[in-house]
Image: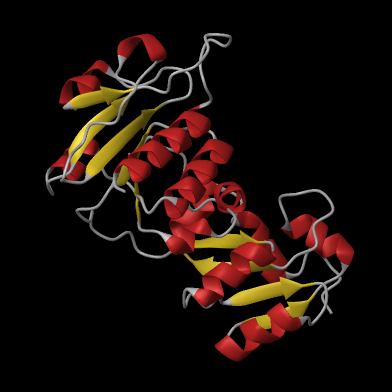
Length: 246
């Protein structure tokens, strides 16, 4: 059992909470049974798994080829990004970003909140959307985003560091998600894939991106609130588009 938070393997893992260390190593942290289970089911074998006990999931990871080590509660608290974590926490290589596929896509344009990004990834997986993120979007493979998506990273295609222009280049029609007063409340009927652009939580989509869209879409509300959370609006819009596909 590892009981010291100064253990070199623990120190290495803790550093992966920082974006700079993730970029330098190409690794990230998977936290919680749902995320680790989803990774294993998708064929991603973590290099190292920290666990509080050798449970079924830990044994499964070991059988897949991961090094599994038991740690104390204090070490797990140091490794995890949540309070009272139950583990496991694993070090895994970030999958390479693939090319944009010609399928329905949600384009995260400057989304900065990890919770919103994770929720949008989870909804994308639920409604069969690919996820494309612009360079100014939060790191989709950060531990916080991975926790928020609860394993959905491994159930849909994820392309990072790309652009709406790259989405349009493969024949996807760009649609801008905009405030209530600015867009249609009915998804356009289109045989070709749709690229739903969701903008930054505070500033929305830039004039350049709005100009690039062939259509706009909004989520109608009662007017009792000024606007919807970006993740909520994007999720509802994806559902509407998926329903329109029949």
